[in-house]
Length: 228
Image 1 (tube, helix red, strand yellow):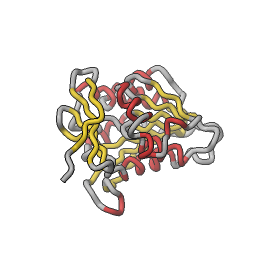
Image 2 (cartoon, rainbow, N blue to C red):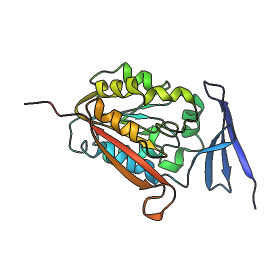
Image 3 (cartoon, one colour):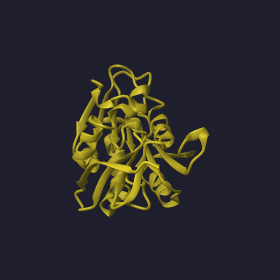
Image 4 (tube, one colour):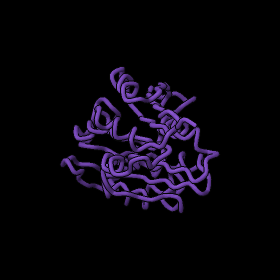
């Protein structure tokens, strides 16, 4: 059995050790403090996240979408595949090395999404991106950490607490949607979406979609459309 090869290492802003490894030039894994954060073999639920959040944007004129968390580029790729040529997609990624890896060894996995002319990269906390762009986006897709529960980095809690959900609501245009990837169910987060004015929907998907894998959850909140 071939050993895992270390391709890169970095530190996250909270001091955690993050590394990119590959096995047999086939499976790529990003680890945080030695624990698997994501694998190139399981990205079906990330594609489902894009489908849930962007289903209403395909026929829009110049839709604007925010993707929170670049990961291995699969969510971004699925988002781009659903959007028209005049769309603008901002991807906010806190860790600079992840952006570098997506321009390097990870780039072919999702078809070089960062080369798409519709993409704007913001190397910053997606929470800051959300708060600084009120009434800006038609869709916000959050694939950060493990979702509202089981945080790799406790600082990510601010994305999913009451202030975070309220900020997302304010950043969306009328009729816009907030889609959140989660590793598990979270009734409190579902109630939080409703409390802040969203019409909520819960989709349960498999990590490899029809091929199985772990069960994940997509939380979808839709902001009411403007009254005519």
